[in-house]
Image (cartoon, rainbow, N blue to C red; front, side):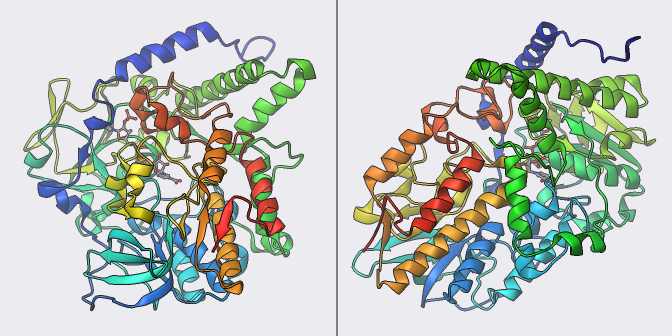
Length: 601
Ligand code: NDP
């Protein structure tokens, strides 16, 4: 602070230079190809450590609705369909239970980063009160199971099952589904909600297969090896172990404090630090909850959260967290401008100013917590907050004050090599008993590779061909030439990244209404017209583009690892007027009962 108690002025030019310097260090010619696809001799990294496989006979029957993916998308859609009276909904899921992300990610400390009140779907319908402002993973997984039970989704579900092909049967107006378990059954409708981040990836470091110690990916946590449990119980088996964790993204930020507490020595191998803002978690008071949980409460909270950031101007901020804070700062700056000066350029400037301020606070926070000066220096993130996944935690930075916990900063280069005995960085070998890969999930790879299947629609057209030059949909849900298929995901809809489930629950409403309408009126097919799909894509392209992970950002999966993403990526956007506008629009579209642009036959 200065004598006048004002924060020191920010030298914007210097910051811009520093950000570019740090970005340049990390740019690599191989972009997304730097990562290892997990297959062949590495395939064991994908094994399910949580649920044994149960043998069953292949299915050869017919269901009204088959949904691929048993996470929030599938659960919310199936729940809404059930409410509409469509009971034979079959969820096909590669995990051993419902939960999706929350089935796989059971690492210690896993927790939602968006407030539970808006993040956890169907709270009002299930009557569940989240125990904390940011619920931990076991509670979210249990909630998924609760939805499954309440809406009777277990009996029909196929777990440990992966779809290999989806073919449209023109004569019967239905889809033929084949799976890895030998199933070959039909469904009138298909829903697809496989999630954006479900295929783990490994860093492309030479020697991974040579390591003689133990190793696993964070999404397949090996509690048999570590001891402890997903509730955060002490991992007592690590007390005599030297453990290395590669990666410092949102996953690592959450599990490092638990590892620091348990390991004899912990080495955190860092290529790029995350921005780690205040978490401020705490229990939810049942008395307070009883007061606010009046009919329609969750929808009000959802709308308020969105209004506070994505193009809205809400007076009140119910959630009050890091997501709404940045948006409020930007809005405060913009409202200071006279109306005629509220241009796109000035809005971008307001965004940059607010971001600089926020990131300075986050960097200063590191200094105020981390005792070792070198470690503190290396934990500072030099990029805009939305360049990478913003993190929020109140124990991560503190973990580096624990004796035995070491940050190994690689100055943007990454780990050099894995040997039989450990990890080498800048010529120095760190001897390890265990390597944990917190290296994230495939994002920029081809849709078909991540999904594990293609769709063959009308006239034998493959979805991979229809989307060869980028995704094309109406509302992010309907695709021309692929009747009776519904995608449940954020892109080309609201694209509200700070609260993905909100996108999914809205899509679920839309789909259930349309399927109910078809049933009530004797229609067998629902399909968006080519013209409506084209017009929607044109509308999307009138927007300013993505506000997260711009081309000037430090490389990561938000910006195609810093490489020119090509024309297809321009289509990975949401409604040009923002998420709030999209939700209002889709509500009107549904209410009109006209389903403009979609044909029922
Ligand atoms: P990320 O992809 O975000 O992080 C991967 C990490 O591995 C990065 O730190 C990356 O560094 C590092 N890395 C990659 N290659 C190397 C290498 N060769 N040497 C050293 N380090 C390397 O994966 P996460 O699992 O952390 O998170 C994935 C996403 O899942 C998040 O972005 C978020 O959307 C979601 N998530 C959400 C949570 C929540 O809501 N609570 C919690 C956890 C995850 P670099 O940054 O330089 O590429």
